[in-house]
Image 1 (tube, rainbow over the protein chains, first blue to last red):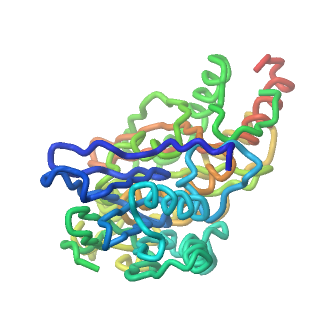
Image 2 (cartoon, rainbow over the protein chains, first blue to last red):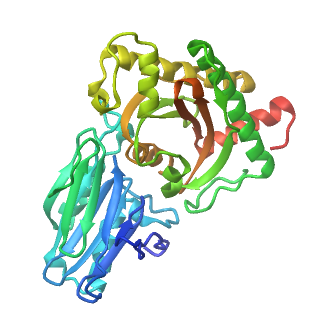
Image 3 (cartoon, helix red, strand yellow):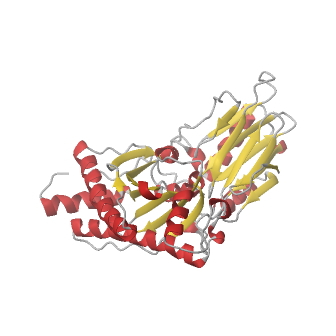
Length: 179
Length: 222
């Protein structure tokens, strides 16, 4: 994968300890190595057909999250934002997690999103991110421990990297719920 | 604009003249659309200057106001070579004001409309009709300008936060490239507390065709 640079890493958080994760961006942290108070909440407000992929190694306290837009990358092109694509994002997140001290066998996944907002009977342009990410997870034998996908409404998601809690709400709901 | 794009991350480079032409196309299209709207509502509609901008796919939501509140988006695809679409974005409140204007009984309030399912057939058909009229007039102005056929498909409507709705549109236009071209016009009907945005989104392949047609028809050098 030598024509893939990796832009899109989120490192800063705002004053409230929140880090917004735009499309095609990702976040990795080793929660043991950072000062006690600095555990950002990584959030996406307005998750539609995109998938939020969260990978956690609970034992080594390493986690990562990416904001995926499309199922598959075309590898004959130079790619600056590989985390746009389900196939590349999962592979790269795992690689990065391992660099930060994770062990592959411990890594577990939570996936959120993948709704069909325009409420069509057929897939909007044939893009089914949920199916794509599940196929990739199965291929790499990563267990999915949490999921909130599908439907026709947008979602908001907050990943608290302090205790690895994931909170999700649908657009019309008032409160976030832990999944 | 003569080279075929093989580098996905390459920024789209448009000349000043090309960008100006896109703004002009947007002005013409949105001008027709807004005249039609003004006639239906029998009210004055103020319109902003059209902007034509190239944005990284992940920055697209930031281009619009209201990206964290609930909006109604009407998406009209125009089958022409590859991809051309017109999206109309209205804050939920504006659409409800519009519906209530054309509907003397059974007034809707912002609280009880949260998704497509909360709209009765009549309200839904008003939104569809407005969408049709605006995109139809926009497309027809462009069709005249370019002497080609541009007929929008039946519009699709979504009610949700703008960011969520934009996901699949951004997905469609950034499969092969990391940038989107957005030609954006804002409108306000101050008497009725209605405001919105009409945005034309051409794919990069379409731009090539567009400029070629203009060069030939109007003896330009885009």
